[in-house]
Amino acid sequence: MSNSDTATAPNPDDYLERIGLDPASVRASDAANRETLAALQRAHVATVPFETLAVTGDPFGPRDGEGVTLTLPHLYKKVVARERGGFCFELNGLFGWLLAELGFDADRIAARMLSDDGDPRPPANHHAHLASLDRTYVVDVGCGVPTMRRPLPLDGSVREDSAGVAWRVVESERPDAEYLTQYRTPGDEGWRDRYVFDATPRKLSYFEATCDHLATAPESSFTGDPTVSIATERGHRKLSPEKLTRSDRGEHSEREVGEEEWYGLLESEFGLRYAPE
Image (cartoon, rainbow, N blue to C red; front, side, top):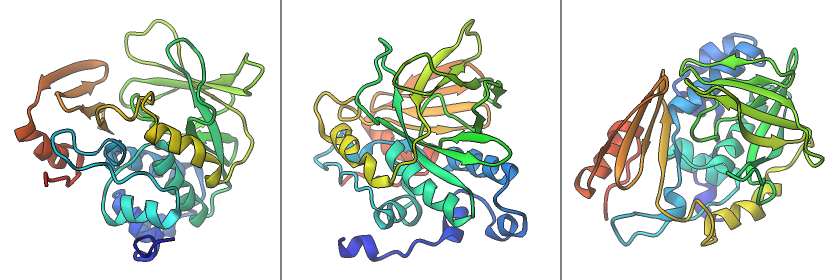
């Protein structure tokens, strides 16, 4: 482990402040309950962006991405101390530590995002959590767009969020997965499949091989242009090198952006300081 990994000691109270929650208020309640879990997930997706700059680097300059390292000190330094974001392995990787620190009975699980043709490849291409409370819930702060904003029970019941997106977890009909996560955006007539998973607990190190592949392989969807997104009260914001997109309960607007304003939008719209070199 490098010195940079150990320079910032992980502190759950600092993490709570990073996502806009008062540590004293969280600890004053019975922290490991359903209401606190929902508040943690909702706050996280609204303050910590899903972003791939560590993979792609600067789209307008010579700066390469610093790469992705799945160690707790490294993730903590990036997300909390440096106030950056990440993709699923980083965001859920660190969030799992916070859940444990707050006393939740939660396991890391390996999920598989489904491609357009329904093929879940590569293996373990998504990291989420199962939390056991009155029921078992999927908890996910690294889903990207559409954003999963609240814990989802595994009983098929439907949960609609403030953006008008309905979510549910049903039993999978696939022989290689126990459950299927689905969503329905405003205006959709049917359900769309998001990812499949089983309930086998995993260690963070289990995801290292797939994380490395997705962060380096030319064919990976993450190694092209960078993407940045964050949840808003009623939708999301998303930034690519060419455009800024806003969504409000299914209504989308977008405008072109240029290099001269792209860095400023990262900070003003997503809280990311990523000035050009």
